[in-house]
Image (cartoon, rainbow, N blue to C red; front, side, top):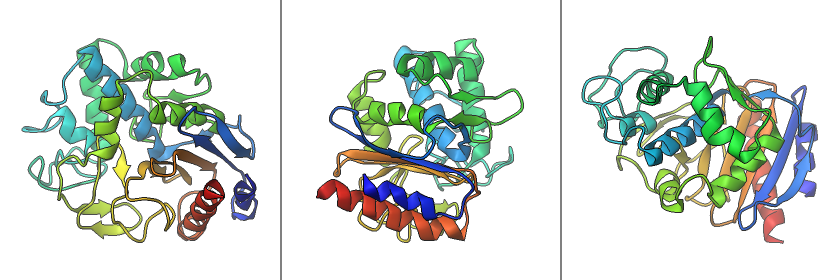
Length: 277
């Protein structure tokens, strides 16, 4: 795919990208070092969420089990509605009332899963998600880093396998993935989309941001409202557009900033235009 060559013009030391078709998981195009490890930052939340959903299907815990601050559940933590602040174990709202994007919430989620499963969160994620998908270079280091983002490392090649799973699930029942990625959790909840300001509503599924009508946005102007995924502060993103029948991954080693807000949307639009032709 020629559109992927646009990453050569990004003002970053290193970048890699790929597009994965939904129907069969085929990699339609790839550019840049596919095996290079990149810090994922908050793209890690997609992997952590998937591990939590596996735990729900395995009966480790349930979405409505208490977790996090008083009144909060696993569902609240996944949907950033537990009331916990961004990076501190402090409650700012009643559970379910506001979409407070929370790294601390994902730390609480990892703790709840570890307690219920009797196994360290990073080990559970590896056994439940990474190893079955052949994501051999992916890890979440929770020894000194957070499962919310700082501890995640992966490659485009590994995330292409994950993107294929999101579009044609084998580890989870497809209905579970659909609920997590296509159904807004706590509809109508407003809050801040990091890097873009307050959004009303700020649609989110269970760990997956849902684009909805948000504008401006880090995805393309032609991405459908059903697009879901996440971007990371380390200059990374993964989106899946069900209407386009494809996913796009881009990893860099320069922190998110104005360069990304300017470069990413036209890149995604070019990818989508090439998919249509």
